[in-house]
Image (cartoon, rainbow, N blue to C red; front, side):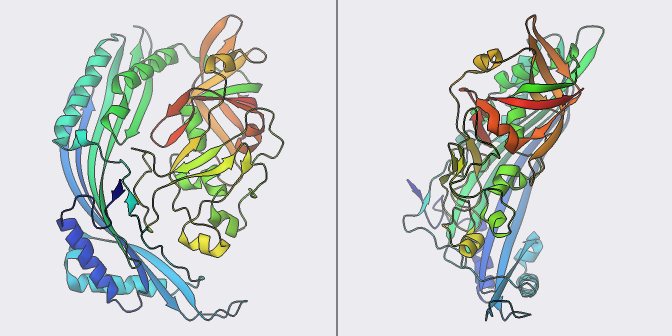
Length: 470
């Protein structure tokens, strides 16, 4: 089923009328040779807890209009190829009062064009909408069609009921957010579409106690769909981690095989602060290739040494149902898709927006979506039995943000385990360091999957050699 080019709802909503007025204003703005407009309205409910006490309940509606104006002009200085035309673009965000007032809107649009005219880049074209329409990617949860505040109260009730099953653990604080969005897009290339989306965010701190000691553990869940929160199972898992933190000791200095599992392995591929500046989204991009930054060459291995374990396969997937980075189309108007970038350890192709697809003369894919990684053949239990003892496993980092260019990382251990002949014991503190690309040359992926809404891939990876600084 395809999404209508006009609207997902079939109704001419106020947001769509605002987008049409914006498109009309852009169409008559001198120098706006191409443009994109995105009108978004968010209805959000918020619930804040301190312990079991409600600190605040809020309902917030926000409107945001973002436009990108493109201007084609004579180059400010002649280029080496003697180009007769150059192109620049500028993106601005409009306040609601600016969008509503024709005079203010015209002024802001002229300012955007003036900024775009200052930049000399090679011209390129925005994509036309597909003849078959955009795919109907599921990113809006019908369970959130009603009262968002009531949905959060139900989540609170469920969390408290789960915590009540564990008398040695309590909630220190919690925040719940539920958002219902309407997105309307218009472009000079003919894109006219709208789609709804939902998002849920739960952030909480648990405190475990044995009567004499206390330890806290922070949990965070971001999903588009209520059922994907798996709230009871998620809270129970974090309760277990909080308890283990009570008995955790500092890790010894170590160099050798190490397993990353759960949240820890997802964060290695999915840097929380700047996703598209994470190592793999960066180096697989056409932009990085054009700028001479990409370490990958089509047909060549993605690791500096031949793989001695499982070989990496990786996709960008903007069509994943209810994926955090999924949508029927991206900001330029490219349809959602799943594109394999790495297959069996070898680089296949770059993901590319309109600009860098034109510059490299490669097929465009649109923006990077959710990251998907192929699974291995061994279970996590089997990965733990491989190789010498002791074996360390890290399940959570305090913060993980690999260097996007080099792939180097150093991250503090929030919680992990030391596995040896006597059993398993929790550890915390110290840091894990290594290089992501080099480490993947000797890695084994679990057959179980972990998903956090943005990452879908192995629940664990056993690396042949990483370093723990005690």
